[in-house]
Length: 213
Image: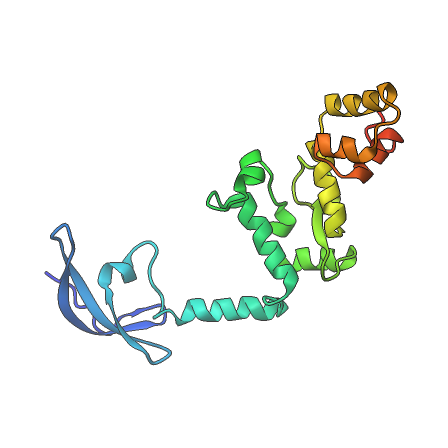
């Protein structure tokens, strides 16, 4: 015997009538009920969607309110840092991102402190020199996005750091040997040959970086 559901409440929804059944693509007949939400909107739902494990609790207004509340917590959803935080997570966790292969695909992650708490990322950024136009840089190119491994740098500095991370120990030895064998060789020539910035060449030759090589 079919159980009468009229008058029952599920979350913010109250069933006010049962309407024509829905026939699924597989041919299954499913009960459909008309509900009035606490916000006043009237909408039809599959009864299974109200009573199942992941039950619907409103006409959609609850999710909208939760989103607004989350935004009001920090009021910074339109801030530049929010977009930066969002893109960091995207390239680490979304395989469809064009940059995923260089981040998430290499095992780069976002620390628990920042992953689901934008305000924590925002507070750290403000306390660690963020300004409009600066980029976040991982000190260890193989390390995660976390306070101990991140800093804010200019675009030029960031490109410079990326250049350094491309070098191998053999590249560094070759650069130094070139200068020893051909003293008159210009930094611009070495820079072009190894696809790195001239300032990087200078730092290598002065043993300011890669000192252990």
